[in-house]
Length: 216
Image 1 (cartoon, one colour):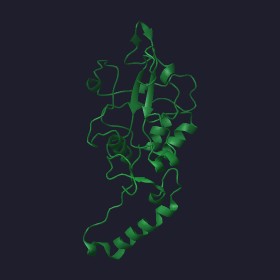
Image 2 (tube, one colour; image 1 turned 90 degrees about the vertical axis):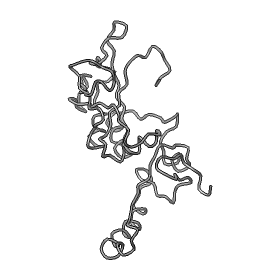
Image 3 (cartoon, helix red, strand yellow; image 1 turned 90 degrees about the horizontal axis):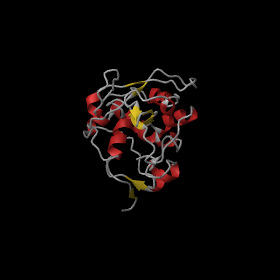
Image 4 (cartoon, helix red, strand yellow; image 1 turned 135 degrees about the vertical axis):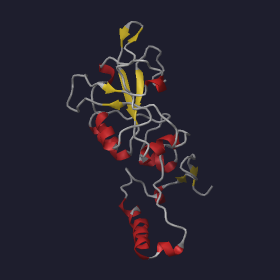
């Protein structure tokens, strides 16, 4: 599915965030799923960014979800890392294709490796890449500010700021805080890890929709 080469038999696992994560919500919505969708994820643990031996172990849980009956393995299942920074760090651990897969150790009688992929916000993704992780394309398209702004790269989400409908609730200190958020956030976005709405040539009618060109 990833390479198009039938000789590539390594299993690919998803390492992700817990179900309180906005990044996880964006991930699910962008692939057409509800934020309540149960997922099958792994924890990548036991390694270190300085481990160049390829001996990083993985800890797995909820085997029934993935149809794996190996009592020595544990999957985190619908759970995930509490922090994007922690998840990014685990993506820098060497192991993956260098290490025998503890869940599917034999395919055709030969030991194979495994690979882990993760979904991360731009800032955490940059940290992972700096540490040696490799960024994947989405439907063949790279994530760049220009590709997001033009709608070519659709895998992104909005940061929403809500206020009460009752006007009286928007006066006083809470109204002041809301006004400052609305006025200050756009001017402090760097255009890479956060893109101002005014830079966008497209918008999403909902967090689950495909980008639409402004004016349509």
